Image 1 (cartoon, helix red, strand yellow):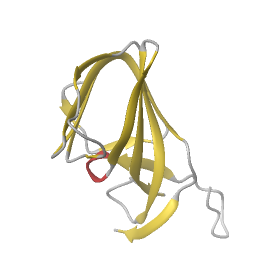
Image 2 (cartoon, helix red, strand yellow; image 1 turned 60 degrees about the vertical axis):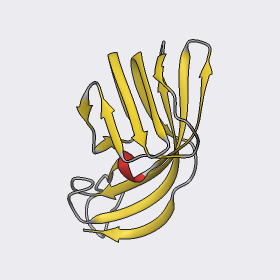
Image 3 (cartoon, helix red, strand yellow; image 1 turned 90 degrees about the vertical axis):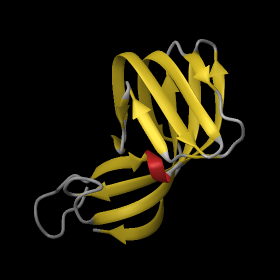
Image 4 (cartoon, one colour; image 1 turned 180 degrees about the vertical axis):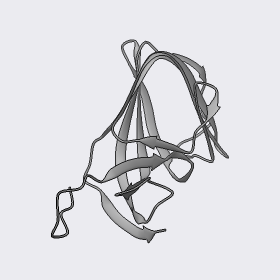
Amino acid sequence: MVTCGGPPRLQKRAVALQESKLLRWELCGPDLLLRLDGYVHVSLGVPGQDQGTAWSQELELLLRNARIVEEPRELPLWISQAELSSAPLLLLPVPFEERGAVLLKLAGAEGALAATGDGLTVSTVSDPHFIERVG
């Protein structure tokens, strides 16, 4: 929350998956747990569009009742394309939760990780580290 001498304003956060990297993935029972080094945009307006800052932060993506469709050839996977439920994805809010059928695909030069599941949750697992001002 930012006050700047006035009423409190909430900062919005979103991860730019195409500027992030997949560090590791593992099946935890029926769920797929992904760990990303995320490139997180923070803004009082619209992250990725309005002026703000960029941060590096580790994130966990949990895909419930997952079925893996494709595995990357190697890690880390530098993500250059991302899809969520068959739609191109530029930014994903942090935190995030989607219920229902989900298709997640993260692709890069090292291959792709694609999986389906019954819902997706995104949460932070580390403190953010400042990278740059954006916008």
